[in-house]
Image: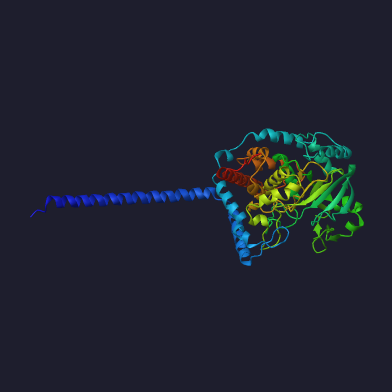
Amino acid sequence: MFKPLHSYNMKRKYAATALLFLLLLVIVTNIYFIYIVVDEKTSKSNEPAKETTVELDRQKAQSAKEHQNQNFQNKDGHKMTRKYYKHQNASIIAAQQILLLTQKLPSHYLELNEQHREILHRIFYDLTPSSELSSSDVKQLTDQWVTNEEIVPESAPLLGSVLKSICNSKILKARSGRGLGTQLKILLTLEGNMTAIFKPQWYPREQIIEGPVYAGKDRHNAEVAAFHLGLILGFRKIPLAVGRKINLHREVMPVADHELLETFHQEGNNTCFDGICAYCGPHDPICAKQDILEGSLILWLPNKVKLRKIRHPWQRVYKDGKRAKWEADEKFCDYVKSQDIRKIGGLTTLLDLVDASIFDFLIDNGDRHHFEIFEKQRSTMIVMLDNGKSFGNPAIDHIDILAPLYQCCILRRTTYERLLLYTGGTLSIALEKSLQWSHISPVLTEKHLLALDRRLKIILGAISLCLQKRDENHLPPVLL
């Protein structure tokens, strides 16, 4: 007998429903796998430097250890109470947020900006030696350049001639660098009564400095690169620095004072000395190649300028397993504005510190434990001295150097606009071209140059974080 017609129709209906369900399952599965593949490719293309992630992991491990020890210290060395524990990862959390926003930067932050060419043309014109200057002319000119707002003027057509003269000036006196920091250096008096600090070369260009951001000895080439980068970014608060190769036997030893001369000795065919400083000694001399020692000459400021040294609010603790208050408290800037900065120069000084943090992050200088301003002057311009602990490891980005920026969330509009000129990978190209005028070129390796472009994106990510905070919390403008 035949089955009822309605039973046959029901089976067809069930079969069609099952097929439809199976089809939907296949479609959903395919869409899921396509999403996974695309997301994986996007993640790889926007992935931060592996070493940046490693640095964050190291900071997390350190933070966990600190939490177990419950032994935080503030900048005065006092233990911090338990109320700060909830903020102990403030710098790490900020770094993670910044890296995330760096991967989502607007297109105009990534595009090549052609407007920088005019600025570079003016800088390169100034760097080109145009005439021979006597040492006395150089001394008079560089003294005139220094004002309450800058060390090198925006327009300095004789800059190249000045730098060339400093490289060739005769050394009249050489003294130990006693009292000029913890690192080995020589205080030189040049023709024309110019004073300069000589920092010797300790490392070959390609050597990577391992360890914390302040590890290792001063890098002489970092001083030269920092000066040129300051010109490019409009931070003209950095003393003139040139590379120079000095014959120790002919140029230094005959004019050295007794204290310095006693530290010289021979190791085979090489002339060596260990100088006078906190970390100096016979156990760790610097040796020339025979008699020739490469280094950097940093021109000292005029005698009329007296500097006042001030502890940096965002100074590091310099002790393993311990954190400074600013690393733990995301609202540390409120404390700075109410205490430290108000006594010095207020908003102007704070903006200078933010500028300095951007500059230091680019060059990887995490050792600015103090800053200098002009003594007994109305100006509160921060002089960016001592950039030797820079360009140590091009693979690591110490984002916490930017703490003044992402904690205070204020920035000069002129600084922001200058940064935007060098998007799209042009910052590294600009600095490489500028350094071609140096007497010790090539000054930086390609890895260090390319790190500048990566770090510029991270800075823009930090600015994006500030803009996001402003919009969410109805805060005052970020750009001033």
